[in-house]
Image 1 (cartoon, rainbow, N blue to C red):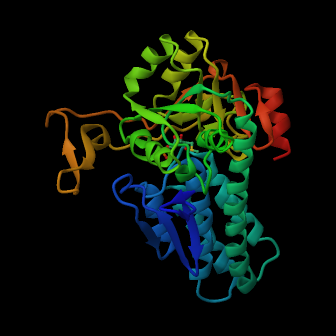
Image 2 (cartoon, rainbow, N blue to C red):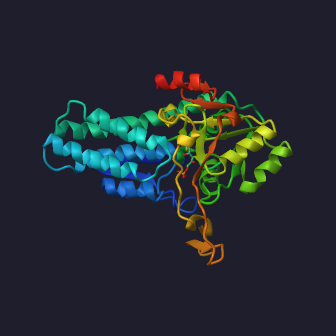
Image 3 (tube, rainbow, N blue to C red):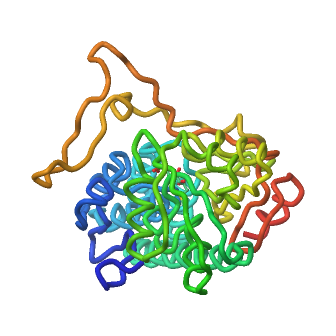
Length: 358
Ligand code: MRU
């Protein structure tokens, strides 16, 4: 993605450090966060300095590479145990996004095949970089497929941030929008603010502004109004995990928008790489939903007149909050799933066919 006329990825590795765009500070400040070891990388995922399913997947892959480099000695059994512990730590950071587990297993399984410690360390870095490059390319392909669905002069709704910041580059839901814009299609994007953490208002809006794509941020509660008044032609969101029957877990509030889209006869698409499908989840009921701290609902963060980032309470001191981070949208509300290999109907047989060849 282009930031201040320079090309950036969301995450990358140099020597034994992982670098990432600090998503706590956007849209107010653009800073790069450095994690010097795999424990710091795990913390960056847990505290959401980096977030979004493919982005935390690639970060987990780099975390495993760091763990390999940190190992002292050359006993293969000890090395294997060290990698198992690091995998557990990295996987325990967030429960819902399938990519985190998929990416960590990708690097771990490849590096531990007929290995000696020295080669495995080099392989870990190589495979983690391969994973990140691969994810960037898949997202570009999702953009090419999705672009074919977008017509000139369309108004598009998106929820949360499924942009380059949520991936290594391009994005999932934002990738077709980006490519439509590069193809000179006249489009307008309605950006759900996405309470409680406001990933839409702070991250998606920032990405669209960087690319000069016309957009407006809307309150989460406003989408129904715009749909009913024929202001939205098309809705597109990302996914954290997809069950084999096509049920989709994505940012809290996605389900509401999908039901509203069906009621208003608006196509509702999900964009996600095939790594998002969980072969062990038969339906959405098998997807674990992350419960986050209530403070995310009770407080809001922003910038004051002195340009200081501040967190302020918006609720009574006595009031607690409930804060599920994701919800599950049943397959019947989804028009299609845009993947790197084309558009899939959210139904068992079709999904199995695609996932077998991923
Ligand atoms: O809690 P977050 O910010 O990690 O949630 C992100 C989302 O729900 C995205 O929509 C999803 O990961 C798809 S990203 C390409």
